Length: 418
Image (cartoon, rainbow, N blue to C red; front, side, top):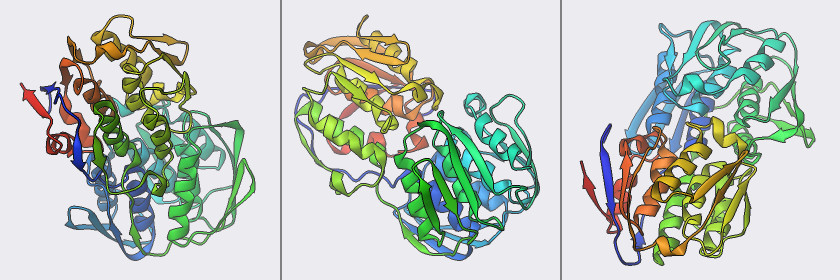
C-alpha cells in the first residue's frame, strides 16, 4: 500500500467480533536486544513482526547474532555475548527504540559502529544519549544531534555513573540501563531533573532485563543501580501491543460495538493500557487529559475527542513533537482538514473542539499521515463515522501493525483503494 490512498467506508453499524492485536513493539525490541547480548539461545514468542522489529533483527544479524524466525510470532536468537562491528552502517529506518537501544549497547562493543536511519529518523533527537555516553568516556559523535551516530568503542565505560536528561524520551534511560548490565562494574544512572518521558516504559525495560538475568535496584525514585551480570539466554513471551489495542478499543466505542481483543485491559503491563479507562468514558471523556504517561495512545484519543460530547484539552504531550513526526501538528492538521477549527494548538497543548454531529456527515478530507503509522491508524477511526475520509500512505502502518487494515476488514469495514 505504499504511496497510495485508502478511503474508509463507514460501516453504519456497531463493529463486533474478535481481533487479536500483534505483539508489543516496545517489548519485542527490548527482548531482541537482550537476547542478542546474551550467551546462548533464547526463544521469543508472541513477538511482533513489523518494520521496526525487523530493523532490530537485521541489525543483530549484521553483527553476528543468529536470528531465526520459525513462525509468524517467534524469534529464536542465538548470541555469543558480543556484537561484532558490522561491515556497513546499521540502517534502522525510523525505529526509535532500535536506534537508541543499540546506540548505548554498541558503546560497550569493540570497534567502529555507525547507527543510521531514514530521513525521518535523521530528524529525531539523540543528543542527550550521545552526551551521556561522551561523559562516560565513549568516543561517539552525532554532529546534527540526530542520527547518524558514529561510535568507536573500546569495550568499557571510563566511569560507572551517569546523569541523563530524559525529558525528551525515556528511551535514553532504557538504553543505558540495558547496556549497563554488560559492563565490568556496578553502574548508577541518575535523572537530571524530575522530567522523564513515559516512566512506565522504564518498568518494561527493567522487567525484560530481569527476565534475562539482570539485577537492578532503585536507591531513589530518580536513580537506578545495575549490577554487571551480563545476560542469560531465556525463553520469553511477549504480551500483545497495548498501543495497537487502543485502535480496537476506539473502534468499539465509536461504533457502539463489542470487540474482543483476547486480553483484558488490566492484564497489560505497557503504559498505553492506561488509555482504556479514558476511551471507555467516550463520549463523555474528561475535559483535560494528561498524555504524559500514555503518549502513543494520544492520537487515538484525540481523534475520538472530535466526537466527544464536550471539548478536550490534551496536556503533557510536548514529547509528541519529536516522535515519528510532530504528532501534535499532524493531529491538528488532520482534524482541521476534516472541519476547519476542529482542533487548535496552544503551545504544546492540543485542544479538540468536539462535535458529536460530525458522525454521519460527508466531509471529504485527505489525511496526511506524514509517514506515521499512529496518525494513519487513529484517523481510520474518524472514517468509521464520517464519509469520504481518505488516508494517504496507508502502508505506513507496517511500522508496528502490518495487519491493521486486515483487522478492520475482519470486523466488516470496507475500503475504496486507489
